Image 1 (cartoon, rainbow, N blue to C red):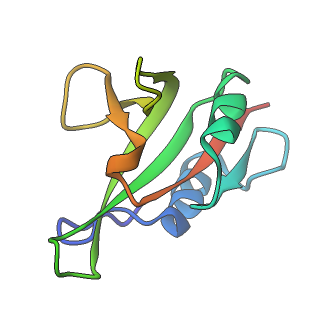
Image 2 (image 1 turned 30 degrees about the horizontal axis):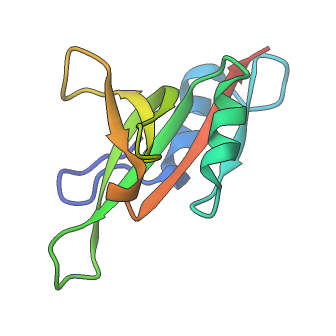
Length: 118
């Protein structure tokens, strides 16, 4: 999916990566739905309730003075809220051997691709 250490994996590389493995999207084997950065947490909840993972790109600024983002590619499987109302998404990635919750507010960029197999 064309991942680089410096920049991570961009969502525009997700679909070509899946197509190279599964064939063209929408042809009966699999399909997807793009969820842009403007997607609300409630929409992520609704999409995850459909029992399909979401391949997310999480973006953070490299430092407090940079406009350049570093991206992390993860798979989202669930969500939760804290007692203070903070929103979390349950993810798994290649950095850990376990699932973990990421706090949505910590990532100024959250966009993804909901993937399902027909």
